[in-house]
Image 1 (cartoon, one colour):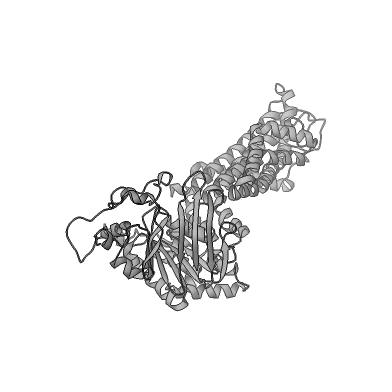
Image 2 (cartoon, one colour):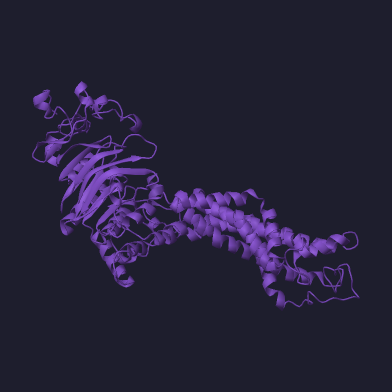
Length: 323
Length: 295
């Protein structure tokens, strides 16, 4: 799946909340999209799925290519038939993502029945198989339980079962582990990785947890203020971050191998979308900003597959900083 | 702390304890006035249904030998101006009143809820059109609108029910729309859309069941209002037509004999009072029992 040049803004706002974002994920690949709250990660995912209401948002450019079929997102959203069958999504809040008035089995069946021409009993069998596959004990019994009878981790497993019931090619996971405790978090990440290995689906994982990224990602895209500022293989980005914002993120992460001292912080906060600076959107918080940064830096390849949107990349040569 | 966590209180089954139905029922039962309301409503429903089986005289049978007689062993609640048994007319009148309450609210729910769901879920122009019409209807007082419609449709019990139903519809449109607006922002609706469910299925399986509790409460309370409205219309001669009995028309004739035969007005008046009180208490109890914030 490939997303090219997505730009969108909310009605009544002058600036784009998602600005020329391009992402691509191949078969069996995990792409992590990281960035702090409000940087446009989730909105990008919602736009991909065609879940944004045109009442509130305007998509001004963007093309989506899913398995060889391409869409102009300014004209039509991902059609309903492909939602859930080609591209599936799981959400941050497993506690509220299931309909409280229906049994688990009915909800999974619903997802299967809306895409395939199968009988209800076949769909039920498939639902049971999916529950088993996501590691739920006693699947036959769980099918007949209501969401409030399950724990958060189990509900997230149910959500994953539901998302994967139609064998999607791409799974979009919007902070799937944020609401769960660390043990369950690790189990869910393992599960997603196993399912990826089994099915060869591509995964776009949205998170602000760099630990999750290190754990699961093949490639990573760092977003700031609605733009992708750095993108590349996870090893390159972690070991050799090039954008000043990525460097800030990395050094703000507590590390066991370098104990002691205070954590570094990125000074300031993300400007409100209505007063984003022109040019480089990070320049008001950047230690290296010069007048040149009033011109917008393009995302350019700095090493193999590793691209960054900064006039000074590579920083080491140009300014003499290392991460 | 650890102890209380490992030893749940004896006698509480954690599974049934969390079941929503039993919780609602328990809460409803603990609400004394709601139970009183339920009993009152049940009583009137029972006598209305059992009217043909009860050993009472024909409500339309006149007896010129017993005109405006005070309550006695022969006529427990007295007789009216042409010698008809008040108790019998009261019991048969309960049918008209309850039917009017239930049917008119049924009409209001049948039209109001789908319109509210559509307005709330789709928004935009659909919502604007439906909401403006609703507000226009709400600007006219409920009873005035019902009287105007009933007069327009012509006097009969059926038309009175239709008129009351239409007058009560905007209440349900507005309530449903507001509920849908909050439910459609829930994560499970979003995930239903992400899974690719068809819109009608999302509406019927994800939105509707979750907006029903407040609508149920409103419907119960509106039945009370509708019963008063039917009595008012019958009082004005726009509802149940003579000789068929109804509480409103009984009050209408009784008003001419308040000095000589106060029982003619007293019994239908008390009946209206108690049945309306019953529905209101029941509605309040349901509201408390179904309110998720208080769990």
